[in-house]
Image (cartoon, rainbow, N blue to C red):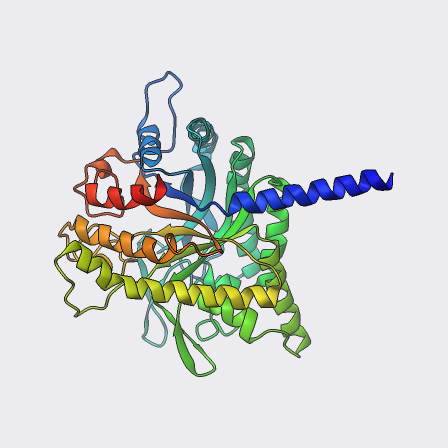
Length: 423
């Protein structure tokens, strides 16, 4: 009997080692995005629909993973309700469409994830939503700085939103499911903006993670942290990195506090990190500064952008090492969003989805992708599990190669940069 148990133990260790070996192979992929006119769907009669054509483009570019981004809205930054974009009467049809598409993706030999996200809109649907505060300050609300007036109700509503897509993930055999993305104020807190809840709600996220894990035991569960040029003040010193820097600060710099209440919050945050299957990173960081004159030669431009990309890789490596030492676990990092628009100087403020300069410049996009992939993909960082670019749209008008958006499809120079790594 003892020999049998030793055999089971050794078999379990072998499976664990194999799983880690599989994760060591960095996976490339894309976020597939839908619009109000073009939805996730696959044909039942063999005629390919726009979403299938988009998936084919992802496969052609060497993508091994497709991330489906489903959407909801939150009315004002202090609201309590998360409302899916899909109307209640249409959700059964949406589920059927998504499951058909997930099956098609898997038939192409790719993995698939579902990523529920939401946007903050004004009382009349205004987006982006700005509000004049009582002190006269003009506040830009987004999902990273929300302050729901009733946090308990907000978490109930958010869980109900996830439930809609947990069911689809279960039936469609999703390989990955994202339980939240860039919810800065709700996870680790923004005390200079929301003093009532300076540490966020780590305990609620831990409970939510366990709830989803019970429903999706086979899916990889992730939370996505933004990594931006925004600065945080820690100990009187400003450091860029957005939400990621705040996570590092909470987990590392404030480790093992003496106050019992703060200790419980810190322990919940550590446990949440430990129980996640992977950590997503949404990276929108400038590779140059305004006022600089970028080179006009492609190779010189890549060299010009590369040092900034290398510095971000170094910052992530340091943060990951520090967090790993404190939490005593080594987590894989997956870039769940990374992208640059095909516009003039699109490598500056890449989070800007639209600006006043509509000049299409594919070379600038390709150089930004090249610098990023050189610093992260080519470097073979041990913590890197995947790079999933933003984005490939279901809308066929975005596949012409002439649009100014993030998509690399039919933009020859950008495609070549990706194919060099993904194929």
